[in-house]
Image (cartoon, rainbow, N blue to C red; front, side):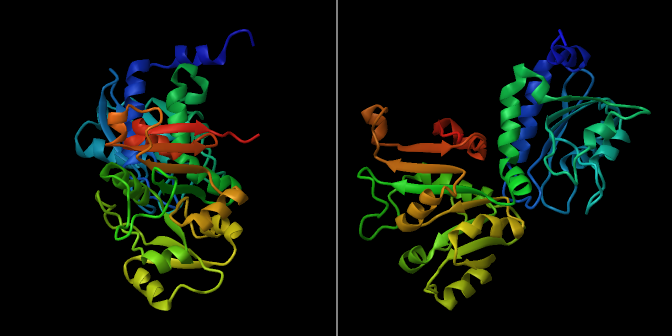
Length: 363
């Protein structure tokens, strides 16, 4: 073709690109607020716009078995008395086209006044995909625009890919997304001073607990349990209301973790899994419906994770690291570094502006 397909998509779209950008940001933000609450489903956001491109409602999928983002947004529009003004739907993920615990979102959109649907990324799950095909089918077809066909909105496409990266990893590869969180002092040690449990500053602790909130599982080792008796609770910010029990994976080849610790963690709301083989952990978590897991462990386990290449992104919190910072800033701030291999949900965290990203894309 001589003409770019991107050009034709923009010509065919009726919604102002500036309004689309603003609405996608609102939909992404709505979905990010529920990262960690939706597994085994992905976090998804939706914004509904009127004919002038004004946002009428935004909504997000909040928990598996509850309405998806599109259905929730349409319900809110009806409750607010604005459903007749809806013309455009902005969705971070392709609307589903299957009946599970909830009806297909493609049908909900077809039964609404929506005439144009903007899709962040296609659904990687074959059982749920097909929403765009259904929406564009005759009779009464809707116009669908996918961000991959609009290069000037590539940053939004990247954000939508980041949003579902853990879900896509589980669906396509059969393994959970693994984020490593490692805190180091100025000397490169993970060991806090005597009498303290951490050397990280308050902002870093908030970041770490936001990650706990956003992930579906925690992976730790027997050494960490024996040394610190960690509770892995979410503090420094509010956890999701009524969230399903999170998974706690104990890497304990020699059976050193005492039974009373396991019982305490189960009482506090965790489902405890023991795994003797570290290589099996990502697939084991995926089989239990976890999209995203975080490793909080000591140097021994982290060395093994690095050797095996089991991580998808690696957050290092360096306390007192002054390189590339003004000295006055180094006294009051930790340095947050992220190694990743392409997409990473860490880019979507509220603290992302303070993160330094280093892409280690694999060949």
